[in-house]
Amino acid sequence: MRVGLTSTNHLFDSFHSPTKGRLAKEDVFSLIAQTIASHTGPFEIIVGADSQLKSRGTFFALVITVIRPGHGGTFFYHKFQERRYSSLQQRIFQEAVYAVGLATEVRQYLRDHQLDTPVRLHFDIGTNGPTRKFIQSLLSLAASNHFRAEIKPHSFCASTIADKFTR
Image 1 (cartoon, rainbow, N blue to C red):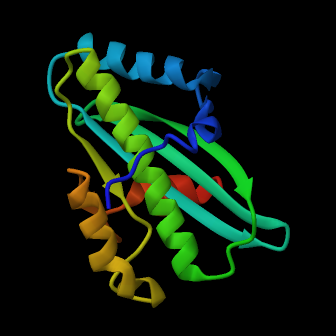
Image 2 (image 1 turned 90 degrees about the horizontal axis):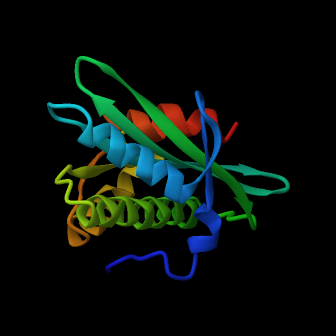
């Protein structure tokens, strides 16, 4: 199943940066491209998502991390609320679809600006607990969209950073 954000683009029109405040999505992508273009060496771009079920609905956080190994990094996040997804499977798959869609947009923006930096995914699932039964499906979703994906305990973008913004 190939994923795109054509019907959900409006959800991701602004992000927050811990250092720059609120930014339009285009400004986030531009900052990422400028950062990569202005430094030598490899960069890691990771997209992750998390959700939390609350009485008023399901709260999602999407995160884009930009890491220059050995030199630190930054991240941008977008929080929003949707209807209440009472099924864990629905919630986990919705997180994944949002992450794949956003990662696709980031990758395309970088390609359009002649930057060959890989984008990978972090899923908030692991071999322990109830999400283990979704591992193969989500890794297949990532692979079918040409992304490498990681799960817990290596999925810090989703399980640590995004998690912080769904609480």
